[in-house]
Image (cartoon, rainbow, N blue to C red):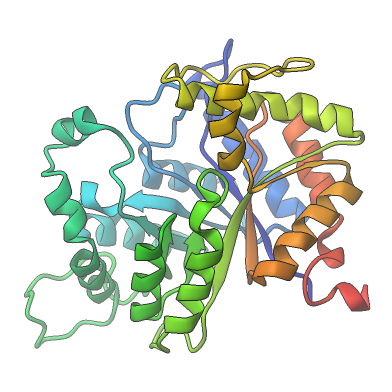
Amino acid sequence: MSLPFSILDLARVVEGGSIAQSFAECVNTAQAAERLGYSRIWYAEHHNMINVASSATSVLIAHVASQTRTIRLGSGGVMLPNHSPLTIAEQFGTLATLHPNRIDLGLGRAPGGDQNVIRALRKDGPAAANRFPQDVIELLSLLGPHDPDAPLPVRAIPGEGTNVPVWILGSSLFGAQLAAHLGLPYAFASHFAPQQLFNAAETYRREFKPSAFLDKPYFMMACNVFAADTEAEAQFHFSTLVQAFVGMVTNSRGLVKPPVENLRVPPQIAAHVEPMLAGSAVGTPDQITTRLSSFYDRLKPDEFILSMPFYDQKARIKSMELTSDIKSKIGPSKRAA
């Protein structure tokens, strides 16, 4: 059995496009992922970012789920400090009831925006983040079977008894330790913050405690993938993501930019951007195979979740097709391929 590949989609809004176009492309991407045998597709909660349209994550999941049949859909992730556990239990309980055995709930501790977003959400910032472990435990309880002796005499209707699979997401050791302590699957955001990747994977596996949810660790690694027929074409499309990271470093974020030929990034900026993009695979199918195999050999992830933030939708689908064709060459099944 080949290593599972999944997709991370932020419903990015491109220059010259619209939010409606982004949502239509989300559906198109999910339908292609389903056809190509990807395991799941996740959407991430962000706020106050004009280039990301997945802020109402559960609503977008519902829309895509209604236009697909089998692929798993979920959050990568819901930023739990922005919400009450009861609200998320009800939302994802509704999704799981409407679309049985297809819904995942990935949880993050960051706010998904700046201090202005925190104020606009009427949240208390650091205090809400500090409650994250307790809120995760409360959410797990609300999604589990009814317990008449529970200390919180509130039931998530719908939600109760759905046992929606909960994941912990992170880019630091905190999430790894929490996922290990609770016996939950763990996804690392190495597509934009790979600095703690190896330490987090090792910590998660070393400290993992079997639970009612998992009997052994399950580690998912995120990776940017830009696959094309030629290396030059892949690097051309990759320039879109490089421009986005340059915007992050220089505090000049905007809509997703079209790719450019021979992009040159000033050395002082490249010194910040390149480490952030270390979790990327760019090139032909053979080059993608080599790069992902390198990650697998060093980290042994149980699953890859791939971000393909192309400007051009046709190029994204082509990248998905090329990447799906190499699954059997990566991971534990490669020797039998």
